[in-house]
Length: 127
Image (cartoon, rainbow, N blue to C red; front, side, top):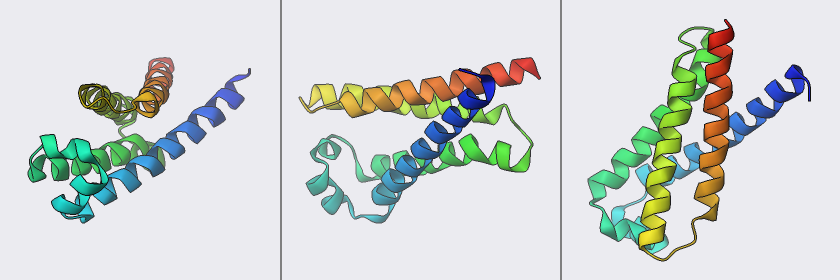
C-alpha cells in the first residue's frame, strides 16, 4: 500500500472516530444523568459530574485530533489527542469488563485510535 493510500485510510479512521466521539460526548453532555443511566447502565457506577467531564474530555480530544491539521499548526496535538482518546477506551474496556458487558467495540476503537496516534506521530518525526 502506498503512502497516499495509507494517509487517506488514516483520515477516514480519524473522521470516523471524530464523529463517533462527538455523538457519544453530545449524549453524555446533553442528557440528564437519570436518562443516561437508563440508557447506559454502567454509568450508575459514576457520579453525574464524572459522566459530563468524560463527555467534555471527548469533545476536547476530537478538537485536538483535527484542529491541528485544519489550522496547519500545533501538529503535535493530533497524536497526543489520539492517544488520550485511546486511554479513555482502555478505561471503557475496564468498566465494561467489570460490569460483564460487551467490550469488543471499545477494543476496536482503541486499536483505531492507537493506529491514528502512531501514524500521526511518525509523520511528525519525518517533518
